[in-house]
Image (cartoon, rainbow, N blue to C red; front, side, top):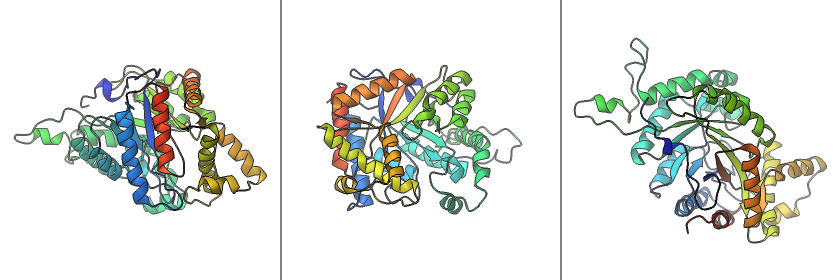
Amino acid sequence: MDEIRGDQIRGTAAGTASVPLSVLDLVTVGQGRTATQALRTSVDLAKLTERRGFHRFWVAEHHSMPGVASSSPAVILAHLAAHTERIRLGSGGVMLPNHAPLVIAEQFGTLEAMAPGRVDLGLGRAPGTDGATAAALRRTDRLNEGADDFPQQLAELVRFLDDDFPDGHPYARIHAVPGPVQASAPGGVQSPARPPVWLLGSSGFSARLAGVLGLPFAFAHHFSAQNTVPALDLYRESFKPSAVLDAPYAVIGVSALAADEEREARRQVLTGALSMVRLRTGRPGLIPSPEEAEAYTFAPMEREFVDGWLSNVVHGTADEVRTGLDDLVKRTGADELMITSNAHGGQARLRSYELIADAYGLPS
């Protein structure tokens, strides 16, 4: 395996934060806005959080969702790489069963060549969409096959990244380019590193697999909060030291939004809650405005869902959000927090990250 430096995985806390703070951007599209505007906001967020000392900036693969413009993580990351210099960039994640492992190895080898030493390859086994869309992506209706084959797909991908299929393997003469094979060509020079692989999950399957393989693990606390502690416990109990990590390293994704006033924070997060209600009931759409969310009459079952959803969204003033995030670290023992914010407009999200950075005394 090519060398993966510890600083490519383990972050360093800045300011008064007890753990490194990072960003998961869903490239959300609000009503009355375009995907172009959403992507410009993502650039602004990446530049802002880089300047303020956040550790990494990830985007996630989603499909057939009008309010989420992140169907092509590799394309977005290439764009972000052109507008940043230091912050780590990565996928949170690429849904491996949707793609041939060789294609992912090529895409992230290209990203590594664009932004050497600061690209993460986070992988998930869910489709990132509904079953019909997954079938269209994969050109098959045997969807469980992809999830069940995830460990084999992962092993194949790592082989392509490291260019180390054994002699006699059908893929031994196939190489992911850019990649290590270029060093063996006449006059070739070995790249200093390749993107570290992360496993993502919202249940115990990927937690156990990440532990057994000695890989870093990112858990989706923002939509599976009840499973967070059990999954992290399973990851740590299953962990075996590897060439990548000598001890477990767990990141949790957390939905958080800070505003200058508590009421404004509540207005903003309600837009994301209404968006989730519509998604869960088969009516995905653009992120509603705060005015629409406030005026919406929730049915009793919808209200129950919203109350449960918002109970896991850390929101309020900057100090309130800091307290909530610190409590989450204490409860879970997370090594890093990856903050995602769902709101209608880009300015609310930009302001939120500024306020969180201020609360933790991150560089200005």
